[in-house]
Length: 532
Image (cartoon, rainbow, N blue to C red; front, side, top):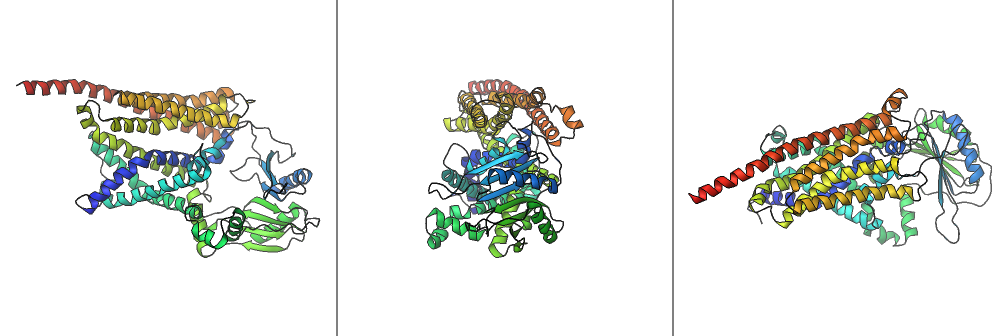
């Protein structure tokens, strides 16, 4: 035990942050990219056209397709082409359970909202896979991933609290930046990055734990509803107030979706309806839910439910009460569901600050021990492994993400299991950076590994706009003239990140070169002093 409370908190902050920092960095980076998951989906399907069409035009198209392909489905789901989520008409349906199964099969399709024709897109994992990685990781059972992410998130919250405790002059340190003093400079940078977006870090960590409340603390649920999946699903349907109506088995003629939409407009006014769910279509118990786009964090989950046969209002969920209101508010804050483009960029930038905070903390651990490690011939194996892991996580994972985007453009379009191979390419690239970083560090060449991977990261990201221009119609000039802002923004962010990596690589190359020159002279003077 340390001599006082603050020293104990400092020890806890250091070791909790180090042990889980690599996984937390992965979670932060993928979660940050997840704020533009739909935009990344759009970039990774460049052949997909963008439509601007009124709902009165697209709704009959969606209804005709679903009546033709799934008249007896358990659920119809329609995303209208008016939101950032879909630049086209997205329809899906869930079949009735078959062969004793409890749930039916889910089928989705992308349609031209004018003609109803299917839009052919390349198979891709897209931005949704990157988003899901921040809470489901990859290549492991879902439940295990949930618990592992939960443990890391809980320790992240502990690291934030202990960080606040040990910095009693936190706002003074916010304005302190000592240059050319390696350990102190990294400490000041770490403090600056932490304080700049501290409210965001606390919110995102706490709300992340809350999102999986019933996964991490299931006993209150199982004590009252049992351990069976059907009983637990019944609880969730009641808690989220989305229990679907039971199919009666009696056919009935529904009002058209256009008529139901017009009735809904009378109730919701100028609110934006971006999703429609129709339960038990063509059945006497058919119901349709019009889901509204939230304008603030407190408006998540608003929807109007109508009887699809008569058009009468069944439920108008304008707001939630008690614990549900708090839960949905935190969920909306965590995912930024209400955010417009400018606020989504702010989420993205604060997520980058969180990633940089974790990266600077990892680097600080090795920088503080570097002088001692050099005196001991390169440091202990633990030090060298830690430095290698830092290199592979901080620089190697962004390289892997760049490879993920490159694979989307370079893999053959008719390749079998193409979407999964995009992910495989990313993790193969990340594995190679791990091998390189640890090998270089264990052979006492960690400085070279930092520079080499930064040069590689710059090359990967500077090649993204080039490869995109060579393999698609959306070069930077065309994207700019056609006002395809997603492609313009992607190219600019890639170039900015590439230039940043190349500049840091150039700076570190010079810095490490002069450090290496200083080491022999220091050793020579020490030897002369000992001889004297």
